[in-house]
Length: 113
Length: 112
Image 1: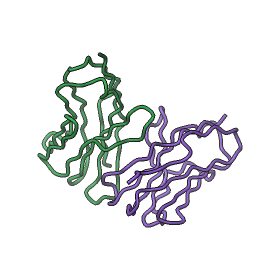
Image 2: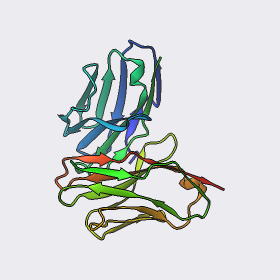
Image 3: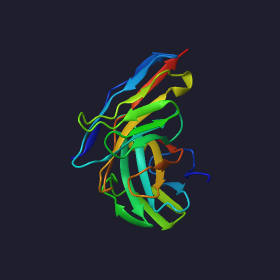
């Protein structure tokens, strides 16, 4: 298995632009998680899905953030409009069982200038 | 609520030194405990896990024992290598599987 695949690896965008991050989970994993990592706040859970359905989005910072999972093999995290404080590394992770043995992707390093 | 607390870093060791990174937890019931490792520029990888008291997780020379009496899951390695330089995260999953908590991470640098 190729693992959890995220794209792009790096994204630099200007403030106000829309940013879309992509994730392909491991085939057969029913749970998908989006995390954000910064030096100041560490790892933060933004949202997670079970069988393509969003279960808990309480970690999404504000309405500028949205996430979708149209099918079992693809998810997106969108920021519109982006702001400099959104600069972080965004990780996608998937698991077979809820909250057990996550597999993380390599992350997308987002820089908003 | 449930949580994990791990020792603050950074930790700097010479090659072949003994490593201990402390992790303690607070939980109702009997959680599962994990150590994840993050190498520079990469995502987190599961290093080892333990699901019940007195279990010992081990991988790549690292070990951690689930100690219910001290609510701890300290990570140890007898002889570290330069390639072990990374950030190590302690984590907890509550028994119901409803919540997952990461510690703040401990940065380890091993110098030749």
